Length: 177
Image (cartoon, rainbow, N blue to C red):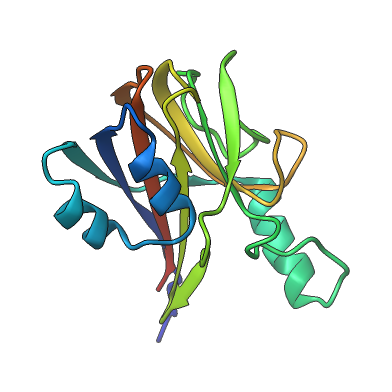
């Protein structure tokens, strides 16, 4: 007997820069690749954090089925996709419908995102020096700027505390194999 198994997962990369004049932020938002930013601003680069896995939320999975069924939906495209970050630490559960913390911010995609590569979709948003300055304990990919949008997934992990003058670029690759 042959059984097909479909697996969904994510890889998140968080690039942290000291950016008191906002130059990294401006360039990232217009779509300059992270690799170029790392080259040009190597003296401002703090670290990159990589993590794997997430919980696909029921509302996100149901949305995929609605799209496949031809229902009218708001797509996860450059005009509608957001990455949300928050300070919530409640364990991720498929029944959740967004970020769980008190402090949260949903940012639209950087120019050129999301992209599709093979069986992956890559989302990227940049958070500037005066945005989301708190402990990042959770993140999500959504098709709107709030918990009321459809959230595809949620990951709970402490990514550090963002402070004023720092620019953080969160890149999330969602992969179905």
